[in-house]
Picture (cartoon, helix red, strand yellow):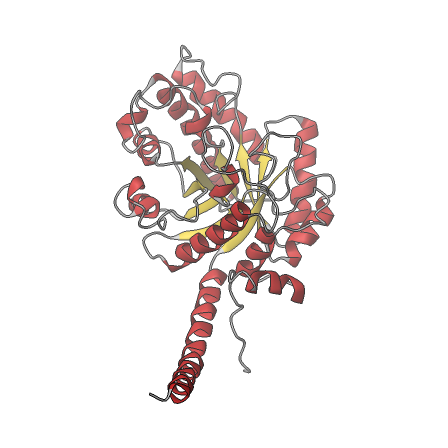
Length: 384
């Protein structure tokens, strides 16, 4: 057998296949980019930091056009801080989701006031919410009813329940939250109706707590958008397939509510690695570390799967969060897209987010992504 001739033919075939397949790969990457363009991409920023102008500039460079902020009650100083930052973001064309808090929301002082009169709870929550919305409605349209209610409210979930059924939340804590959230949602809709502004209510859930949404619906809580927090790992199945969540995965379980979905906390599940309750080597939060690199690949994998799926209408993805918080304990200290609050030290995850959002990447930053085989290409432009 003439091995030189055989290898020559094999190499020629491989070259032809590469030539044929390369355009197909490019087309698929461009299609992913087109799908990404249909979504709003953003980040959680808390109060906007000490220099909202600089932050808005950094986000605009990366084409991150949505932010999620904390609107924490009616404290005059906090309200002034919020309005100052929100005005800057609005001026740069960056949309805002504001998380509203009342006395009854998760981790607040009356969160476990189970003996309270529920009519009083609803009215108090209504008034506290209405004043916050009236004070900010010129700056934003999307208001979220607290943050992670099912995680921050003790005993809201019935013993032994998974949270997948409405009856799982028919508890004293669940009924208290229903009264409070009902008042909050009515206040937002009432301000929207009276002002003729398109205000929207976001009701959030986590884990597989679809029953929370169903129970709140049954209790008269009004909501226009579903907020969902998820931190999937690289080895886990797509969010429209993972059977742990139920048939159709997490997105298949959310779809029957027929509401747009904002995945308004999203990042790599590997960030939890090595912390109490989570197995595996520690997430060292640095490029080149195997667990960290796995997180980048998982982040990319699940973003592509969200763009590919058609089970549910995902309208936006907001990463948690803009910068690391070194004063906190792991894993809360390492979710940032930047290592520093001055936003001078971007992580690979920021570059990845930028590629999906269609923002500015330097040649060196593009190389960081292409060398890892992650990210997407911008959609091609054609002459008119």
